Length: 374
Image 1 (cartoon, one colour):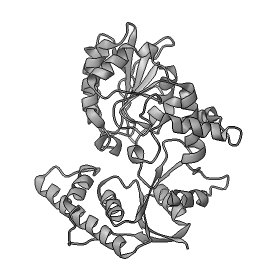
Image 2: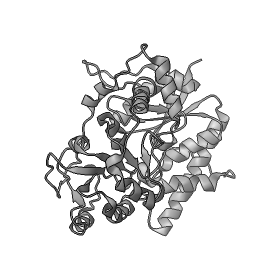
Image 3: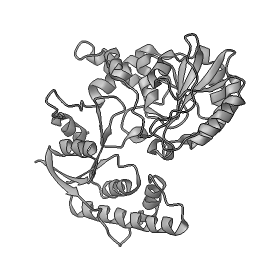
């Protein structure tokens, strides 16, 4: 029997196209407006608070925040009541981790419905498709043995040459009106840790920021930790080109007070800086994953789905970060595990999502059905 998807509507063309491709395996019901119900469940308040805390633009005014919380409660109630009455349907949403979409997906999940989260993958030409969630909440095992075993079982049966994907990795385009501002000339023999900043309001920071909690807090920690670097090393920071929040003033002060241990370069291409770095440090950015294709050691500060040892070096406190920076010249990554992990992502986890020569987008529906069966 064909699946029936209840899709939380998405107006942006690229996202809608992906949702339509996924829902093509069944009969999609597109929701233009969220479900609403005023009758609460025992979990309503807690679920609404989670949705509110992850909203892209949480209201700062106490009255507006209270109103938004109430609306999210109604949306959670409505979604849960709908899926409780329509057993067998699947909730499908783009991202599904923020605000109204999170309320929708939590309502469906608590009703016992299957959920499917969709988003552009952190690797080019791929789509994220997961029953459990996205980013840190996805279903990827955090177990090195799993990937080593998978690679051994598939040797000789599929393409395991992950290095070919490196040529497709490019930096994101800057937002309209972006001014690169601070820059520092990158010479050939520099020894540095590259730090690509993330968008402060992004889900990755708001929900999965871990102990550093925010980009600003991370910069405070880095200002103190830079002193632990070996002689001749520096932290090289680049602001996110899509962010509408600039840390220019803070970064300039950090650089001026660091005795050369902190530099800011907003102009040099992100992956030129990755390639020339000795290591990449991030809260949980996709650049951390992409840095593995450049065979660089990666340090994570927040909750990253790829953030497990010995694949990357996880700093869970200011002290552990200081220790890692002190020994940065000796940081290594297990090449066998890294190869197995990247090959698994490319061949097994992320389905292809790119247009053909005629501009038509394709998605393997067998993969959709496989995800639903997991």
